[in-house]
Image (cartoon, rainbow, N blue to C red):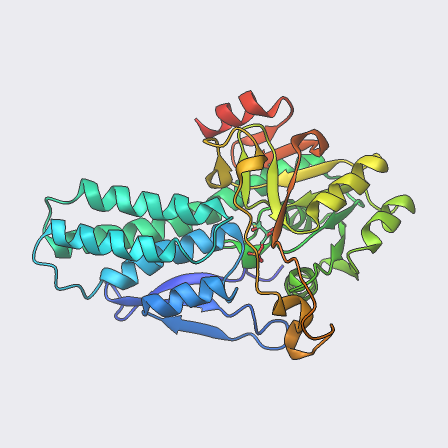
Length: 355
Ligand code: MRU
């Protein structure tokens, strides 16, 4: 298998030092046509990259936000730690307005803010270096969590099986390797033959543009289907299990993921197909009792009426464009995180995994 994609990295200007530097990320709006990297140390460009899905997927958004904070303060003229903390708070507050649903964004920003506040008494230059190292740690920990999810998740697969997935929860959505796709890559490394059906994932086609692309690059047997074909392939008996990622998992196991995931879960239940959610514990939001309180992003209606630049709906038509839905815990067979496989009842299982 090819080496994993480096979806997002921090590139120091000079070897041997961490600062100054810049973020380098794969511009996912250009895939699958072109593999283009965006390099920037500009806070607003990082905010825009998150907002416009140049970088997307819950864990990758968190990493981008942490690196965004570093980029924002790396050339700061703060005279003391307290002034630098104020700049960190401002940058974090701004980045937090980019997208509302993936809790990893807020998790990463909170971690950076906590570190800044704890270092308020330190000289600004040292605090800046600490922040940079923390952002790199968030990236590296995410890569390790994905590998662990792969090791646990492979227990749910067998050689020769077929997995259906929705949206992109692969290497492009994380530091590398992915969450929902991690067991598939792990299986592939072990020489297993695992096939994937990838939902195209309307309206922005993360399944077609990203999942199909990265699986094909890795040599995995992948078949692209329209979203509405998911129930049909389950009825035809072609799917052994569903594996999807998550943007936020409430304390009771209700899981927000890309719009359409709920319909896949309903179809899976109707056809007796196990439905697995795979996500790092940074995606857990145990402050929310249920998924009812998960904020759901609504996207620009033009993403539906003018997808990829072509007008496909009558002018002035009313549009409802939630980017995510919440799959109720009762439809989820298991939640796989870096600590292991959590089975119902999810509340105690998630508590244990998060502690
Ligand atoms: O709008 P997106 O592309 O950021 O949505 C991404 C998803 O819904 C993913 O499935 C989720 O973030 C999990 S990524 C490991």
